[in-house]
Length: 203
View 1: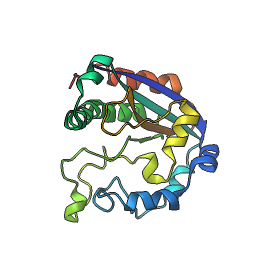
View 2: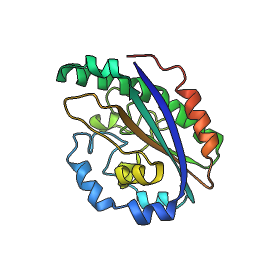
View 3: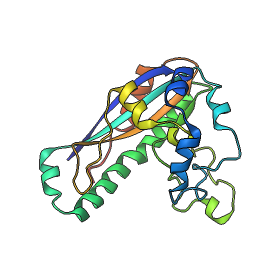
């Protein structure tokens, strides 16, 4: 069985960019990913991410921990089971998470949502076929794709350590999203995300 917890903390954009922003470094990591150049949510971009980020005063950083009970972890006794359950459980959370983020964005006019990972609105991104994005109203970018060190940011701002345990199901995974805005809105954003995740089905 899995459960989720939502943590939201606001921090100044200027401070976050000074401490955790290194676009050249993290662009190199993106280049090693098969999604590079194949998804509109992923680099390379035809715009300046830094210029967009500096339009906002605050980042409401959102951490959604996907926690697994001991019985579930013990039952994952092969790598194949771990991989399949990890994919299914994270997808079960990510699917309602995007609409919740868009709801949060609409609740704060002028804000911008950032998703966890890459956009999965379409099974195959139109970019692979040389076409414009089919759903620009839903497609959003991630903090890491813009150049943030999400691991360090999550540890320092949210107090959550991102854990990986290859071949085993860890105690939790962490999905990191954000809402850039003109002011902190921690409680409002947390409530919207929690409501959006309230009906998650067990994988």
